[in-house]
Image (cartoon, rainbow, N blue to C red; front, side, top):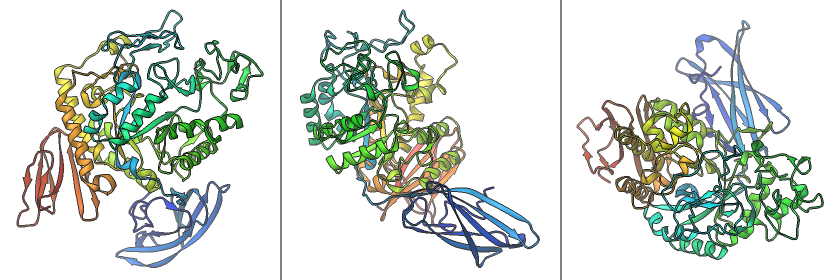
Length: 619
C-alpha cells in the first residue's frame, strides 16, 4: 500500500534529498506511523535492479515523536550504483501484526557531466519541412520516389490509398530550407530559440522518415550549402538548429537497402546483393524479400544498430553522420523512436555529439515516463546520464489536454510531480514540452471539438472544419494551455502553424501547409507575448516550481529564481474562482493590479476560461 501520512517519497521530510539522486549519495528515509498502531519494528528492503536485483535490508531506528506519530529513520548509501532502486518498508508490532508500504522508485543517475541548459531554457519551434514555406514550385523530375508536387500551396494532402491499397506519401508541396531562411526573422519574433526539423535528408516520402541517403539534404529542400547558410543565419539571430535522427530504420528506397533499384550506384544495396557492404545492416528472414521492418511496414526496413559498420557510419567514424552535420551547423539531435535504439548505441551517439560539439544536445522520443521505460523487455537508461539529455514530454501533453478538456487540476499536478520526482534535474529541465506534434492531431482541433473523432470516417475527418463556436472554444482553451506550456519547466515547443490557428485531425490532416497570408494574427500575437515573457523572466527559464492550488478546474503554480517569482493561474472551468496571494499582484497579460488588503491577503479574481501571469506589483 501507499500512505502519504506515513511516508511520502516526494516530501523531503520523508526522503532527503528530494527526487532522483546522483551516484554516491546517502539517502535518508523517515516514516511516521501513528503511535496508537503499536508498531515497534520497521525495516526497509532496497532492490538494486541494475545490479542483478541485489537486495539490501536496513533497520529503521526510532527517532522520537512527531506529535502522535512515531518517527523511524534510516540512511541508504547508493555507492557507485547507477540505475533504479525499488524500495519498500515493513512495519511490525509485538503481537505479530504487520503492514507493508511500497514499492517506491528511486532514480540514481550519473552526474559526472554538466548538461547544457540552453535547450530547456529556450522556446522550440518544430517544422515539418515540406509544409512550412516554399519559394517556388519545384519539379520532381529526377528525384527518387516517383514524387508528385501540388501546384496549389493550400491544396489538401493526399490521404486515400492508391490502386494497390497503399498510402504512399509521395505527394509533396515543396517547402524548402530557403523558405525557412526567409522566415527566420518571423520565428525569432516569436521568441524561438531552437528550430527542430523533422527529417531533412533525401527520402522518397514527404515525411522523410524512411531515409534514402543520410549524407544528402533532400534536393527538394536544397543542398548542404543551403543548410550551412540557414544555420549560420539562425545562429546570427540567436537560434539553434536541431535535426531529427532516424537511425532505427532506413528507407526501402535508399542507397543502403535499394529495394527497388532507384539508386544507380556502383555499390549494391542490401536487397540487391548478399555481398553488399550494407547486407549486415539488415536482418533478412529470407533474402531479399523478407526482412525485419519498423512495425511491419515494408517500406521502413529496420537496421541492426549494433552492427560495427553501421555504428562507424552513423556515429563513430571521424566523418560519421552525427559528426558531419554537427560540423555543418546543427546544434543537436532529436532521436526518433529512442526507446527502440539499444542503450549502447545511444550512449555512443551521445559521446560522439559531445566530442564534436560540447554544447550540443541529444533529445529522445519517448512517449511515457522515460525514467522507468521498459522496451523489448529491457529497462532503458534514457536519462541516467550519458545517453539522452532530455526527452519529448508526451506525459505533459496528455495531462494538460486532459485538464483543459474537463479533468481535475490535481491529476495534472500529480502526473507532473511524478516526473519531477523520477527525473534527474538535468532531464526534467530539458524536456521537450508540446501540446501538438507531427504525430498528434492539431491541438486547436482537439480542444475545440473535444476528441480526435476516431469513430468518424477518414473522409469526414479530412473535410471537417470547426464552426465558429468550436473555434472560439478551442482558442480560449489553447490560450490556457500555452500559458501553462510557456511557464512550465522544460522547453515550450510549438508545432509549426499552431500559433497561426491551423486545425486538423491526424496525419496527414495535421501536416497541412502553413497558411501564409491567412494567419490568425491575434493568436500569433498571443504566442509572441508568451515568448517575450519567457525571455524576460529568469524564473520561467530556470526557476523551481511549487504548486499553490491544484483542485478542480483551478491550477496555480509558482516559478521562483532567487528573489524573482512568477505565478501562473489558470481557471479552465465555467464559473469564476479566486486566488489568494500574500502580496499585491499585477497581471502581466492584462495589466490589471490587485491590491493587498489589511489582513495581508491579495484576492485575484479568475473569470471562466481565464489565465493570468502574476508578479508582485511592488516589483
